[in-house]
Image 1 (cartoon, rainbow, N blue to C red):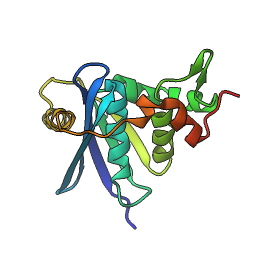
Image 2: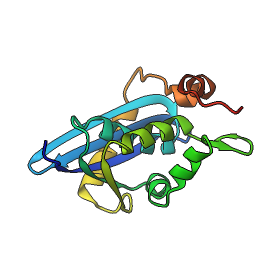
Image 3: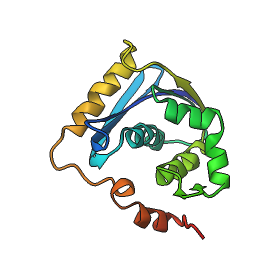
Length: 169
């Protein structure tokens, strides 16, 4: 299997913070292009930014790809490029006063990053970048859908962390 170069543009949106949220990702490789999006009824903007990257990586059909993630989220990009994610994982995603925020999503992202060679590129949001603006439109539309599902990691984080095996002990 030949390693393809894939670029994933991502964005997350939240009506208020917290509030209804949406995420979007556009995957491109040569002439191929695929956009995906989704939303949840109550969440945070940071969770949606993370979810967009996660869903983009999950949409890849084959492992061991060269992937460039283009995001307007410094929270996501710096956490990976400055190796904060690895430090958090080494500590079991724990802080002095409990768990790191969004530990469920960070754990999922970390696993997905291990399947590919991934580079992150940060871009300024709402600055006219065509793909970023398109993802923003999709994410906003996703958060406006009716009957959105729950973001279990936000609404019941203890249950999700328990299911993932993250414990404070």
